[in-house]
Image (cartoon, rainbow, N blue to C red):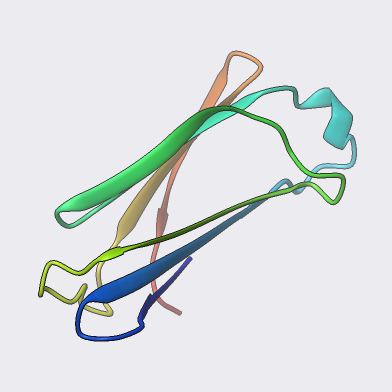
Length: 91
């Protein structure tokens, strides 16, 4: 996941979710949510691309508050009656 502040007024969020398994077509529809300090987004009814990925890029007005580099971001993914939650941190 990448956050880029394009200017003083706009910020771009680029989220890439990649399936690690071998049978992409077995996954079916996916719902996911991404939560961080003061913001979050998600989608339902998404399908993986042929390469096993979903990309979500949005651009919005900044809130004049940068997200600190050490911020943990919680991601929840649901598919085929399975739910997994994990935390993204900066390497």
